[in-house]
Length: 422
Image 1 (cartoon, rainbow, N blue to C red):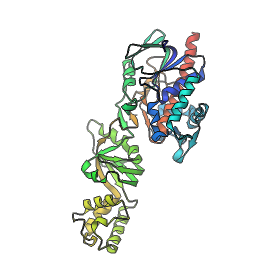
Image 2 (cartoon, rainbow, N blue to C red):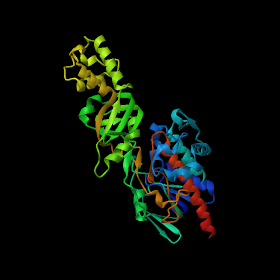
Image 3 (cartoon, helix red, strand yellow):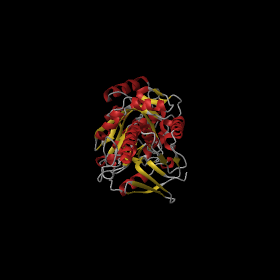
Image 4 (cartoon, helix red, strand yellow):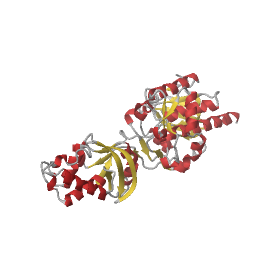
């Protein structure tokens, strides 16, 4: 496409960028709108969400599911709640289905069908996708915005929506480009950290457990005090811990470890869902009943065999071929403590390539929460993950992406109409 002059230019062809373009058209169909995407095609990261199924939203979304400047979200989330998002997707041919925990997926079960439906909707409305357009500079000249690409091309528009997303998964499009564009215009950003990501521990403590899972509780302790806990699947890896419960807690660990003088951070694993004293009583009973069994099989049938052997070795220095009867009461107590609260120091998190969302971002104080428009540079709008706002697993981050995009798209369309009349 040679003509790159638009009423509204959307920088970024991810989830919020595509929705912002469609929302602007829905509000004012006569406007000329274009989507500028730095990758060869739009929606690449969206294709990978929800393990390829695309967790569109969550009908139970509430402020408690978010972090950062949650108050800023109130207006957009009130006007575009999950049910409104679901209705909007039905307009585009995607039929949402509510599953366990309020998670919403497309009936097709395919994230690719969501991207296809959004692209078809863009094409049906005459909204072009300008791909391999890497925005390198953004400036305003009078009433016109100029978006200069790295390859020298230039797009012009009356309004600009920056929807480039955060730093997560660079191989699928995550980058710092949006932050750079906004900071060049005077906007400030908080430190950005990986969230919804795996935790690192001492590899020696978990390496033998690679691939082992348990369903139970895990707490994050900061400076020895429990800060947040989750119940669900915990997966041991060669570098530490993964699983949904771990990823839900990762923001707490990531934030604490990023402090100038970071306090000690640890993960406490509750492998048995029992109080410690009950676990000790259970082990005493097993010792009496299974006295001749070797230690390597003492916990077989109670927990995963490899996990049981690892914990027995930590609690008891005897060879694993030793009969259970030779375990002392003190060693049994140590094993009960590990089963109900094994504490592992957390040394860090995996990086942005493995993270699902960016914690931190552009400061919301410089934006209007009703319109997503910059208070510093009129005519500039920002959506989604770029803000200092992030959510838990379960469709909450996409809900914010859609809601903020719909608010920005509608506001930009209204403002563009006023600009024309002026």
